[in-house]
Image (cartoon, rainbow, N blue to C red; front, side, top):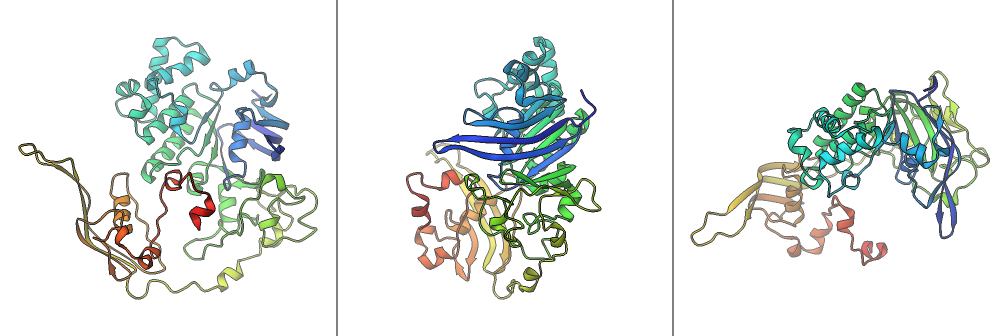
Length: 459
């Protein structure tokens, strides 16, 4: 152990091998994490967040390679450790929780065997003590009936339970650092909240540091002390949660952070993350930045500098001081379109949807029925956003399916722009009515036809 930071990443460079040659994806990232601290890493998909995490645990795979820099963990450089030394660190002092718990759990082993395996492999624990520790961890992650859970297989548990199991596996040896890569993706909102509360509680109890990777800014606020914002493999801004969310300085952060979203329109960032292969000199965000200055922003590296009066707040932007005075005048000057007037676009009145299960035999028991939606009344005005939330199984998706014509109502009425559609399936709706309502489903892989190109599907 050392007196310095628990984790000190210095000038990390990572590249992936492709058919066209080696492509650099992390050009020289540095970050520090103190013992017991929670650090959030945020940014768009493709910005390199998961690559940083996988570099720390040395799980980059055959195509990935650390090409430079140091990863100091408890004073040892993980980037130079051999396989045997690395095994002593992984799972014991350093653990990782991945996005998909089912990809982390062995489907042919019981939960108990998988939990017991960790202390037995890394600490040489005997069967009895490993079982006792596994049961204790299941109680810590608040799983009911730990004895029964020990004998179950992963597929017999819900998504939230599976994620708790993975967290238990990661913490059973008391690691100094826990890396969590999108740990609540795919969980419904109430289960997500419970898992985040659990993470905070376990962090206090075990005093583990956490590197928390997420797209969900609300989750980061709930869990983390400090935040780093990544773009194209670089840390463009870093500071405390309060500094980043109330006083962002980088133009990548300004449109979405540091203001009350209820009082100002969302300012979208034009374009998308550019390929790392085409990285230009200067600022990596220059191609999408509304405030770029040719020459000043497009030549040479842009080092991170301290924000005056805010200790620990650093930003990689040569115009940060100027942009601090920018108040989005153009967005404020654009008056939002009038909303909420006239006849509601969507109106539901006593909407009911009941599913019948099975067929009744001549002398058999009556068919069971599931009351998915019962007597729901709601309206949504044109130009407004209506959120429908609730636990899994509450009827949210059924409500949407009836509105979209994928199911028909059992009773009640549904009007879409003045047209009654509750009993009108989608194949009986005309083109004009179909254009008025489109759905985005939860799983894009199940929505897109794998035999069609993206252009054909859109066109």
